[in-house]
Amino acid sequence: MIAVGILILSFFLDGISSNYLMWMPSFTFLTLLFIYPLFYKKEGKYLTILVITSLFYDLAYTNILLWSTVLYLAVYFFFLRYRKKIGLLEGMLAFIVISFLGYSLLRSIGYSKDIFLFLQTVITALPLVFLYEMLLSFLLFRIHPKRKMNY
Amino acid sequence: MRKVKIWIHKNQIAVFLLVLFIFLFYLSFTVYKKESLWPIERFCKDVVLSIQNIVTPKYQVNYQSVIDTFTKDKEEELQSLRKLLDLTNNSSFSLEHASIINRNASYYFDEITINKGKEQGIDVDMLAITEEGLVGKVKYVTKNTAVIKLLTAQDNSFKVSVSIMSGNNIYHGIITGYNEKEECILVTSVRGQSEIEVGSQVITNGLGNLYPKGIEVGKVSSIEMDSVGVNKILKIESKVDFKNLKYVSIIKGVKE
Image 1 (tube, each protein chain N blue to C red):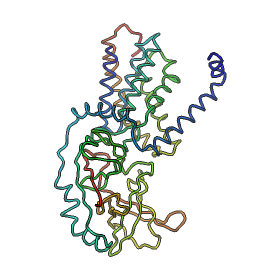
Image 2: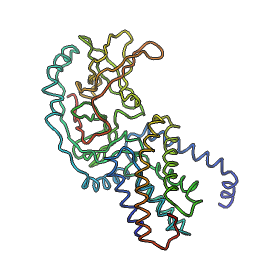
Image 3: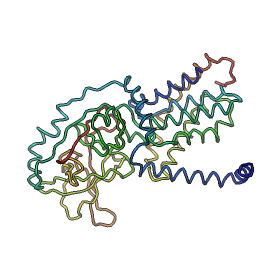
Image 4: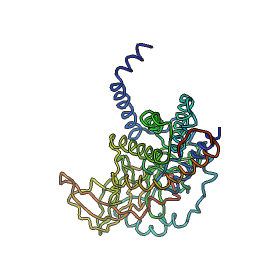
């Protein structure tokens, strides 16, 4: 329940921070990653939360319905499912993967941005990704000290 | 059902490619062709961004400087332009000032959402400006919010007719894109024989009755011929800092 609370806060944080940061760390996505180990053997429940959150994210922020849903599900099926422990490095790696996936999809339909400017944006976002991961791991560790997570 | 599951399992790659193709088709349609938000999107946007609007700081718009963009400072210039273009002064418009409450990260921040919408008289295709000049145009509108596509967007849907004031001559062109490396607006369809100087002012010309005339776009920073060698491509340097926008003004109403 607390995990869902953090998820909702991250959702609004994403919206508010977009006014100030030109290199979004995607707080909602990172939170979805870090709460994954709390749903050990409850994959169905986790997937439901993932789909609902990403749908709301698209409805409120992206103007492309299913955009985040597809990206988040791709990360889940090709990355997250094979890792039962999510650490700081895995989180950063997943952030890079989802950024490149989004960039590739938009580029494939001709909505292109300069690759170097894109890389610059991703690299600039990494320190904040790291800090937010630290905060998440601290909060979740304090709330659920017995869970099997590797920080 | 079981047979379908077995078939999917056996043809995983084919199913994956099919889903990817369908999604890319849908994505392409949404990015380039989607004209309005779905009702559920409008509802969610209104609810979520109304909550967000409470905690987002409101910026005090420098009303006078925005108004000056069209009236005092530009009046003399506009009068001469009207004479040259033989246009009558029959346009009427008002400004709706709004704070930016969200930027769309999915489009690399090329879309912004403001805290004014249909209830305040804002509609699709209206122009957004700051005191520095043209910023973009309204793409979607909900009850209390509006999404503005910035000039920096890459989808080439931002076609606004402009006039280039070079000496005593006026030439016409169309805004067709943005060069992000050089951070300049691209104006094409300018006649190849036109004698345009670097530094010439570029303003909207109101042709087509869709937009008001006289809004500053920027100044010509470089000129080159297109690949066919028929028309010129102008690079326009805008004074607007697209990365640090805090508020915009929407121009409501055009020619009567």
